[in-house]
Image 1 (cartoon, rainbow, N blue to C red):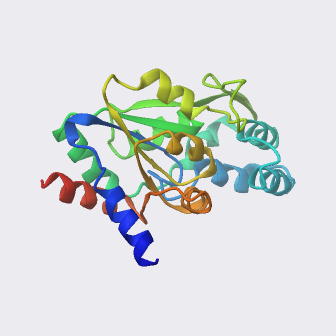
Image 2 (cartoon, one colour):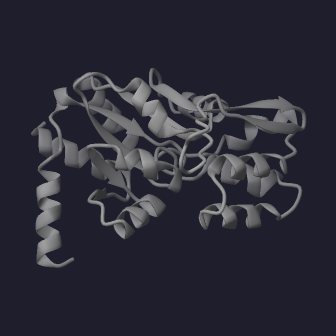
Length: 235
């Protein structure tokens, strides 16, 4: 990073909003969790390897996440008895607990905006004794052993064809006079992140923001984010 870029980044960090001015939007899979829940299901229960081509088409921007997920879900065969058991070992980032403690202390609105599935999100949160967070995500129908993706927050005008249009959810739920802080890691976070006032990013999200010349705080885990907030708010 050259001196000019470093200076711009420092200036960007100074724009971080005060506690009473903000609300937080956070991705779930790969951000709150250490692994992508749906990826784990696909690895284990897909009837063949054709999901790899589907994934490549999505990564290349040839299809949106809705088409990607619908085609991948069509490959899954999961017995009812294994649906919940299959995600028992999905771990959360330990930093989420300190981050949520800060958020609760300052009564900051927080919403999980996910391209994943509510059934899995709720179970993983419950397994880790995390409660009371608003969730916007996709859902499923399970006609054993088949799974069908349902997208209640889809937007036919979504420019990237997402299963869950996170921008629309943010537009719907943003409180008056609040600045948006976004935390995410994937392609499905890109549009929503760019509509936010401050971004914490890693993974594919960080890579794409860098390509587009967008400023953000790059993190490896949620503890780094909690530490940054503690420093900014002088907690």
